[in-house]
Amino acid sequence: MITYEEALAALRAHEDEGYRAFHKKLLKDDRICVIGVRMPALRALAKKWKGEWESVRTFPDEYYEVTFLKCAVAALLPYEQLAAVIDGLVDRLDNWATCDCFAPACIAKHRAEFAAYIGKYLADSRVFARRFALTTLLHFYADAEWLPFVLDCLRQVKAEEYYVSMAAAWLAAEVLVRFPAAGEALLAEHALDVQTHNRAIRKACESFRVSAERKTMLRAMKR
Image (cartoon, rainbow, N blue to C red; front, side, top):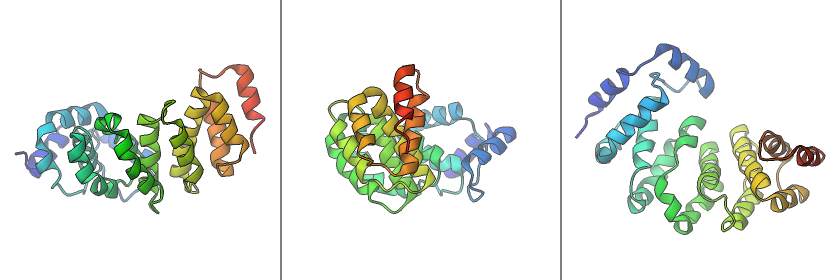
């Protein structure tokens, strides 16, 4: 079983001061302590520690990388084990980077069971709980089968905060790209707040999958 001290030593072996300063600026939260480990190294450690969940879950959340690895190792768990710990992991989400990379692969085969968790997190008062719900929809639910559910989630989410609004816009833009009629109907009903509505249009217009003519039409739908 790996100890916390061994885990910290492994992380510090990959410490990069320049990257630490760069990543702290991206996180925009001085309360988060960052060692400065690049993503490929973090992913490699998560894969290496796949069987160490019972040890990793006990580590204190004093560094960004430790919490990230806790989520990354949990993301490799079978669905039943993940479901037993998911609430505690969502409790630990305090930044966009950890949130956006936390995409447990087992959800793909258990979308119906996990839908209740998405509803719960969408109604949560915490910014990164709602963002996690939206990024999970983007990772695993943005297809024809689950489109009605995705649209309902976009209609109900409260997205006043920047990080929630951007995730909702990201998801809505994917709907606009993949399901034009449904996405445009969502915009037409003014289901999203003004900022999220306009951000979704901007993100859709940044896509190479949208024609120039359709981009012009979407820009005309701005509020």
